[in-house]
Image 1 (cartoon, rainbow, N blue to C red):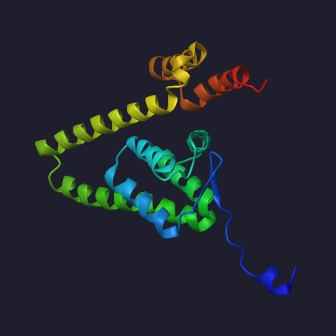
Image 2 (cartoon, rainbow, N blue to C red):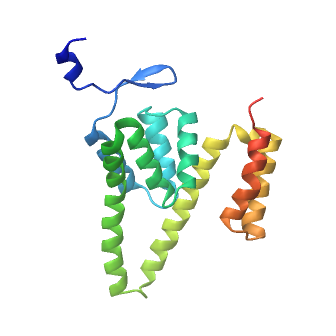
Length: 197
């Protein structure tokens, strides 16, 4: 190997998803795509938009990679959607990709919350404000339910997976156990059931 080729900057390897080579996104494309998600989605529905972008639209991740990244993001401090953006950006373009994706996702929401917060503090008792907040909550719930079904529909066909889901729901919603306690109970059970054989 010559000294020139040794000192030349290495281009990033092509992205491979489901056995097919995909072009790597630019930093601006990462920033822009996640900014669009941050601008048009809200609440838990952001995960739905991220799944559509990453798996279906751009094919930057396959469904298994998306689920693995989502699982990791849920164990990290902070918002799942922001963690997801940072992890995906890092996977695709390294540290700069993580920064671009993270900033793109949070900038529209931060600007929106700032503007709405100023308006709400000016007239907190306005009836339209409560109607808007109720509509946003309903929309976010619907989006989250839709993406949960879309991602987990394969597991919903298996009785054991359904039992794990129902047990987790009962522990959190009926017994009101803290999330960390539920994880400590259910994670070992799920790992044992789905251990490699």
